[in-house]
Length: 251
Image (cartoon, rainbow, N blue to C red; front, top):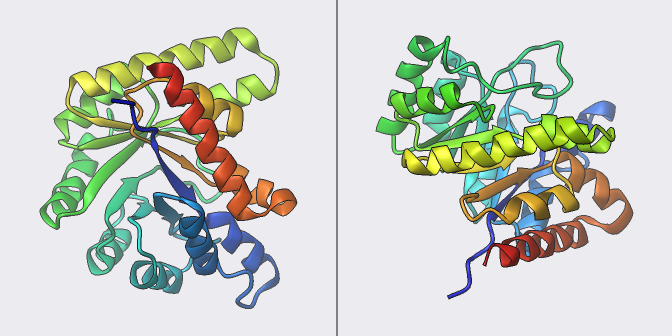
């Protein structure tokens, strides 16, 4: 029986970034989510930041009410965000690190040093029936910590690998890639579902999809940027085809 390709979660944050750059209501990130789903997206990801720089509270409410696929709510581990998540009840919450000065999420969550802080948030989300994911580096100690914290899912930060490839640093890219591959195997051995996200394009999504341990890819910035040239439905269809081609190699 053929292996199914990974699920594709489409992050629509940067549709909201364009909207907020000018103000008003257009382009509408919820409309982008609906278009993405019609084109084949398996879920929608949105990050509600403390400073509301892109996604807003009303966007999260509308996404939960209007989309037909799972909603993945990216958030920092704060009391404010926990309250919003418990009220919104998304399919999943991905806990991420957050700094106001960063342009995008720069690295994985420090689950090793912050396990006592994270533990009650994970427990409350689990108790509410919300699937919890931790956005971490593919580091053995971090994966072990996620297991101790009873997180059912981890998402590996692939930015280091993708950036090194784009900059032509082959040795660094190879080392980062092998670290992710090892992390995928460690996570599965511990009973954790591994996802991958950050910086992925068609080529890197195809490469990482060749590993059967990968259950889901979450991709946003590239797809929204590519949609300027080819349209969002075509960008998603091409991404899904790349992921399927990669998974076919795993067989």
